[in-house]
Length: 175
Image 1: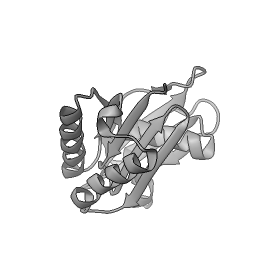
Image 2 (image 1 turned 90 degrees about the vertical axis):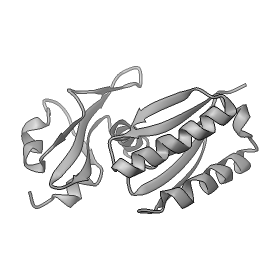
Image 3 (image 1 turned 30 degrees about the horizontal axis):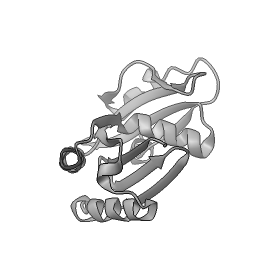
């Protein structure tokens, strides 16, 4: 029997749900600024129905712990807590920035990623990640909130090609 983990994330403008069962992933993702509260539960229902799995058959529930939108993070955590409590499931907090790095690996085979999310008011949430030989991701330094002009001096790029991910790059491209 394979491990089944449901993940929800509402920390950014995207609203997403994914279910992993062994090597199979069923996911929904929608760009839905300010609509997370109306989108997330139907997405959960849709993913579970497609998989033929009930909430109480899951092994754990993962949630995007941020950084991200203040309200979005709280919506995701609240939904995750409600679902996990009702089904007596353990919860797993996942960094939004680290999830972006992992996503870049899955789509671009990037092993070194600098992720930045627009934090508004002239700042970005930022993290730098490197895929290790065992497949785990290591954060280099710490996840921070900084001004975009500080990004070039923060990035540690001693080796290889680094992929950029997230909304922080395009939001402050001029800076």
